[in-house]
Length: 261
Length: 65
Image 1 (cartoon, each protein chain N blue to C red):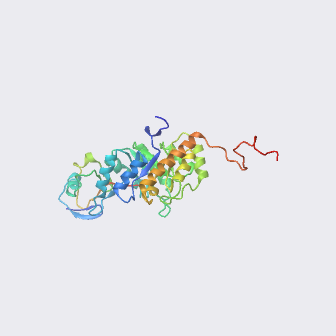
Image 2 (cartoon, each protein chain N blue to C red; image 1 turned 60 degrees about the vertical axis):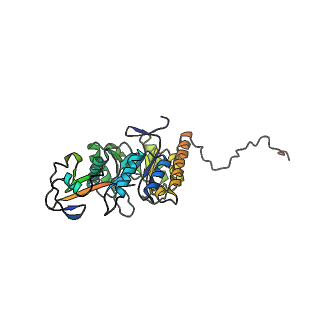
Image 3 (cartoon, rainbow over the protein chains, first blue to last red; image 1 turned 45 degrees about the vertical axis):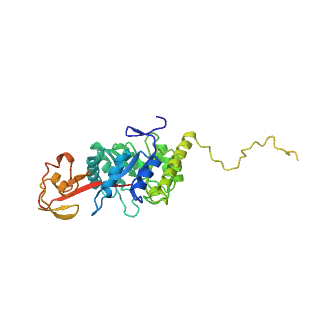
């Protein structure tokens, strides 16, 4: 399988992981997943709202698409809450994958990296394969790896902000520091060029939701992201030229007509 | 028997978590269950009794980012 993405021993052709929330309709979500070619989608566990059947229809649709599900612990503010949510998710989704979110700040949705490491340690001990939503802090990343994480998911920018890669330097340093660890930019991506940028830095995959769900046409945007990721990945594999401060003509100067005038 | 289901007080006849799942109308959807903040796995629902005042969570798959 050429240029496959491997996460905890499972290989995928697509490098786009798509969130399933906030779409205008289940049908548009289904079309967006299909056209994006995403093989992994994130899901959550919630109480059913009064009289609502959306959750039931949603789950039937996801099963029919045959995609790999990555349950999340979104909304959890302590390691204890996140661990309980992960245990519940494993029972209902029949997967030991968990996107571990431990939120530290209500406004920025910045990860509580201390709770994150504690939660990752306990969940890994319980046999979970943890996908930690973290910052671009390399020391935190090292601690997550030390407790058993085999994938890291640093934020590009705050969740839902669409700002792109807020700290490109830190993300580049992280890539250089962990050359063999799958790195996924999770959160903050707004447009396909942001995703392409991350892929050009050598990131292995992108996890996004709002940028597609809240686009004017989510299906078109999903396709745009698929193409953006592919372009960025190809550029990374090809190796980009070194930027230069001075102009250098691309057309040969030798043989220019009228050069003696 | 009065218990709290998903944060709402309910008067139920169910005696186990498995019976409660059916009584609350979740027999046709996969659910996760917890009793007093402890997970009740699928395989343990029939043998997990519920008692007056218990706090039960019944959660279903939902959209997520």
